[in-house]
Length: 240
Image (tube, rainbow, N blue to C red; front, side):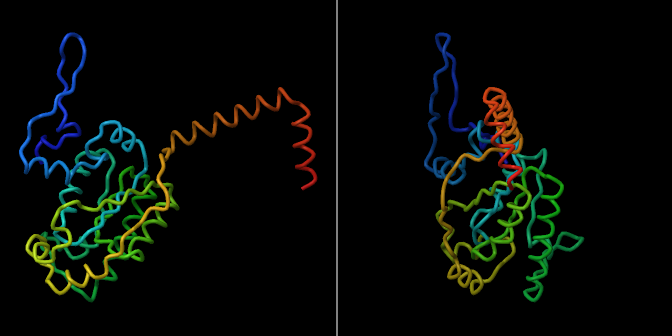
């Protein structure tokens, strides 16, 4: 992958008269399309990347085979290379020679293996856990949401922005595992949109500990300033 997709590839800083000015590069239509396709903050924003590199985060990929997930996963692996694991049901069908031998009868086993690999990565506190499956239906996503909750991971759902991600003909021609048209069309019909309940800025483990410690210190100071409060709380505790 070219350095053209470095976190700040679109904006170029230049120095003039002792102050920084920002200048847009002149780019072609295809480059602009590529920029939109890959302009996720966790790939392009230095501040976001720096924060996530210190955070336990699960990147949950969503999309049909051939929609562009692999390109995003490749960039994620490079950016978060210090602590990253990619979990995929497809790995179950890859033999020791690197050949892909899909068996529809074993797809359930493949997903159970992927879920176990994901849990193992969470147990080992891998900072970036990438789940590289189609995750089209909610029931396919739920096991990973649960593992993220159990082990204190923030979930980032990643869907490709390619303009062919719903085009069965292009998806069939682009996917590397030669998934047939009937399966692609069936999966497109099963697609369930995920609508967030809320948006927020989520603290990582270090930041959470800092906030908790600050709150504890202020609470102790409050008890020293208001001794009657300390007595009242002690009485409430005894009454319980």
